[in-house]
Image (tube, rainbow, N blue to C red):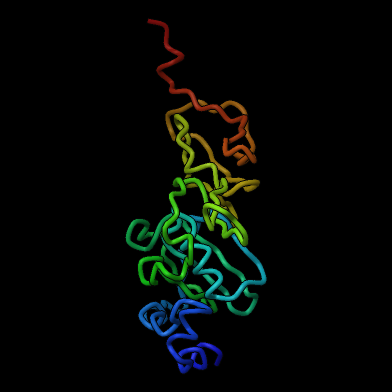
Length: 204
């Protein structure tokens, strides 16, 4: 396995090429196999390795955990973890669940010292005279719209750019409009649904 081969390399070679991968042992020891966090997605990625998936979480301030399906090299990064969203932590064969705090921040490379905002992700820059990273918009945030009930979101819904989530109005609100909330490239939600409290229709 490449991981173990790297760990046998001289320390000066490891520090020159990549962060010491031997320090990843605590992260691997805390993997939760056969589990994932459901319906708390920021973004998904295809054809990536598990460590690439974890790294994507490390460079995204909002990310707290990842789901990974090895059979398809499929990655999901989440804005919650099993502590903050306990009821969304489910059994699911073939998946692996891991939390951001279990991995060394050095895995993020130069992005470990980034100043990116909560709705941004850090991207490495190959050549730069000042910084070795840049911050780019990553998501629209968790919708904070009056009367919106997010418990009706679907499995594939996500808050990342160009993604969408399905929502409805809480009981006691009158709904007008329909359709999903769409995360636009400017980081703002686009939607037609409006939830108005019943009291708003009363004439004093």
